[in-house]
Image (cartoon, rainbow, N blue to C red; front, top):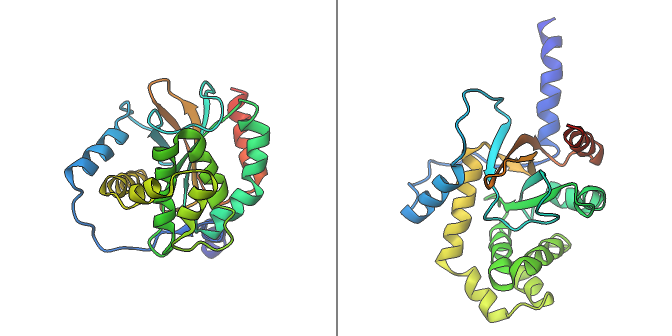
Length: 240
């Protein structure tokens, strides 16, 4: 009987693994450099809470580009790896439906944080390219890059620059940005923060409300879940 009671829990764990790319166990990392450590500390600042569920997380969004109506009270934060097949499936199948129904109508604002996994060799340059699209071209280029990089059939070392060129960014400035220590440190800070709050695979989402102080707090949802799962959760929050 005990084995039967454990069976549903096993199924849940398996479901998470077959819908997301998971971070491999790594050796202990060296301490962060002071600039990166400070950035992680700033991102973690949030109101003290005496108790809350383990899957409820808080993320600073005031320094992030927003897709959708910035005044929307409902927020979805996405942690993604541009080479992860489950992230790409989500972007092809589910994201367009969410965008049409909730983002474009002003009901939901979207934030994306790159979380490249170390066993995806082209994920890191793609993630640095994502950051640099915003630094060299602003918000419009940032989201244009996001839409296009997922549509590259097979990522390679040149994909970020090719996408940047397609959307009209200066090739030289973009390449210099991608190779800069500043951007490498910024990505390291994002990875460290994501790991601290419990992100272990991609895609991972945090769906919740804008706190009005530059942060959002919400439920962590793991994996490329079907549209209906997100719809039910979003509609429930909208009805409150």
